[in-house]
Image (cartoon, rainbow, N blue to C red; front, side):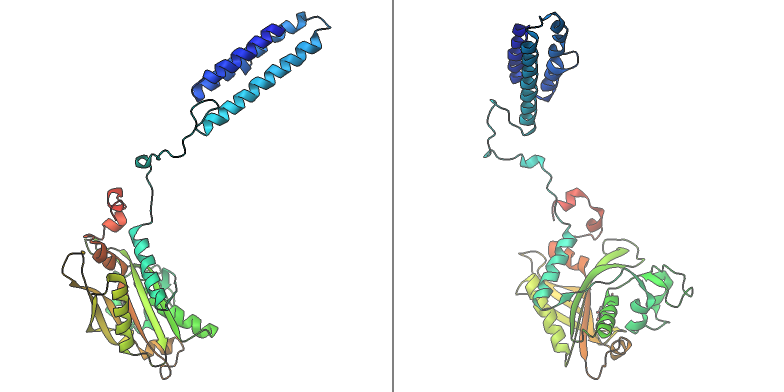
Length: 343
Ligand code: DAH
């Protein structure tokens, strides 16, 4: 019996060594340690062993079992980590299988948004956020947009509450200008401002028909600066500074007179930027801006005799499409991997 045990041990260890992969190692386990395996197979022989020899044989049986089990565990662990005792050593300097790895990255809009936040942060703007489900008080009323203004038409907005069903029907915000109101209200309530200097990037919603330049959901970035004696010069130099920091030293900014209910005077602003490194710079229309209307300051509890400010807002998609040469806004939302791999 002792001889049989010795044989099982040496054959077992040799065969385990030779087992090339996980399947072979498992087959070995069944053959040697399984309930019908070689080790169990010798048990019936125990009853024929003489009384004096029994302790020694029993001890040896346990030793062999322990040795095979330990070898099995070690072999399994070795396979798991890609190496094996006695097998070829793991070469840590071998190049990885890079082609087979699909490394992800953040979406182009996320990256642009972070770039913008960083540029404005360097100019001293903090980031503020507001809710996407807003009410008409913040989306319209306090922004000096009167009840009969066409922008409030239910056909041009995603109302959540039926108009008239409550004092301030909720809606998906149609512009990030809502956050101007929230920031001013909060600052007055908490005594933390003005002065105020914030930007607010975020999603906005409008029931527009989707095409190459329109989407029912897109992103805007809003800016608000309230202080003593802020003027139109501060507004234009901030926009110019931003344009040059983001697009390069050749970028230019121009303001065209316009109208927004929440600013007076109001302007639209364009930036002259080279859309490709070697292309001639061209003007793109980017957004709206102006001096915060005194009615808006008053609605938020800020005295327009003491404080003035400017505001601006522009579409992030538009800017990203300009900077990265993306021809169709839908590409930004379809999440086609072929597109995402390029930007
Ligand atoms: N909210 C405007 C829009 O969605 C953009 C805008 C214009 C924002 C003028 C401003 C501003 O802050 O001063 O079209």
